[in-house]
Length: 119
Image (cartoon, rainbow, N blue to C red; front, side):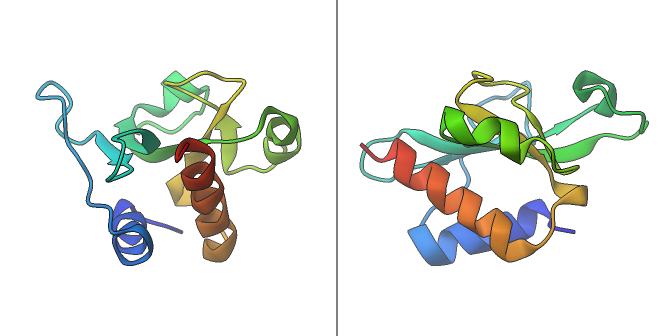
């Protein structure tokens, strides 16, 4: 299981990214941005599972990442990856962090999102 702290530690070490909390109304929503252009490559949120079609009752942490449309379908067969909650469903995916495993695969998806958004 990955936590938001695992994600934040990884992106700080690999990309020099610190989470940005731009919304007062949603103090736990953290944007991961490129330092040089401000573009988002990730968004960590805590949401009610029902918003994602899940049965759990307590809020869960999710990570939204950009993904090539041709990979979306094959990634969504995993139990930890869903259609994007907040972003464009064709170009973004949602990872349920409490289900996310193995760490290396998730870090690869973060790198893919980072590379897709750095242009």
